[in-house]
Image (cartoon, rainbow, N blue to C red; front, side, top):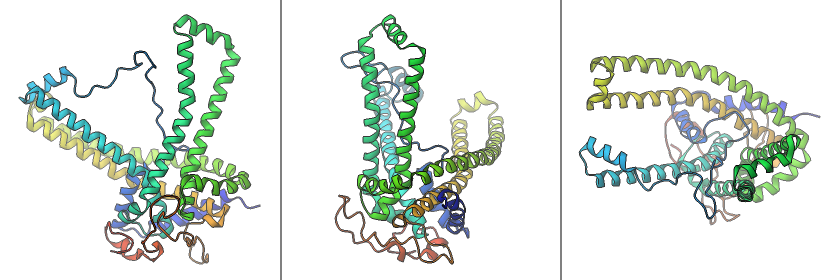
Length: 400
C-alpha cells in the first residue's frame, strides 16, 4: 500500500519548484504580500487562537485592571509638556491613535483569514494574484474566521466556567488548597493528562481545518461545515494515511525549522549588525546618545533607522517564508489529492497527465450562503505567463 505522506514529499518539492521558478520579481512580490498575512509556515499544528489569560469575575472585581478609554493622566501630562499641546488635544490624539491601531488590527485579522484561500488559488492555477482572488474568496474567509471564533469559544467556555465555579466554590486560599489536596498527586497528573489530550485534539481539529478543509471549500465551492462533512469520510477511511502524514509533517517541520532558524538567524544578525554600526555613526554625529535622544533631528534619524531595520529584516525573512509556505501548502494539497481525487487541486506536473481538475468549481462561493451567483471567469483561463513577468494587482479576468 503506497503511503501518500511519503510520495507527496517529492511531489510537493516539484510543485514548489514549478510554482516559484523561474524567478520573477512581480510574482515574488505578490507572494510576499500573501505570505506576510499568512505568517509563513510556522512549526506546529496551527496558530489559530490566543486564549485570554484572565477574565472578569461575575459580580466581582475583574481579575485584571480594565483597559482605560485613553492615555493615562500621567502620560497625558508628560506628552503635553513635551509637545506643548493641551491635555485635551493629547487625549484626543491618543484615542484617535488607539482607534486607528484597532482598525488596522481588525483589517489584519480579516486579511489573514482570506489569504489562505488566495494562496491555495495561486498554487492550483499557478497564477499568483492578490486582488481578484481576495475579492472572490472574501466571504469564505469571513465564514472561516467566524467558524474559528465559534469553535474556539466552545473550546474555551467549559474551562472558563470550570475555573469560575472553582473560584466561587473556594473563595479563599485555604479552601482552594484543601480542594486540590483532595485530588492527590495521581489525580492531578491524570487531570493534566486529560487536558493535554483535549488540547491536542483541538489543535488537530483546527490544524486539519486550515490544511485540508480550506482546500475542500475551494474544490467543492461549499461552506466550512459542509466541507468538513465532505472531508470527514476521507479522513475516516484513510485515517492511517493521515496519521503517517502527521508524523512525516512533524519531521519535515522540525528539519525545515532548524534550517530556517540558522539561515534566518544569520541574515538577521547581518542586518542588525549593519544597523548597529549605522546607529553608532548617527549617535556619534550628534555627540552621544543623550544628545541624539535630546535632539528632534536625532530622534527622527534613529526612528528612520529603526524603521529601515525592520523593513530589512522583513525583506530577508519573507523569501524564506515564501519557500516554506509554498512547500508545506503544496504538501498538504498533494496528500489531500492523493486521498481523494475529488479534492485534487495541484496542477499536473509535466508528463503526469490531466489532474487536479477544478471543474467542480463553477461559481464564486455561490452556494452555501457565500453570496449570489458568480459572474467571474474560470481561474484556469488566466494568463500566468504575463502575471509572472510584472507586478500587478489585477483581477484574474484582466491578465496584466
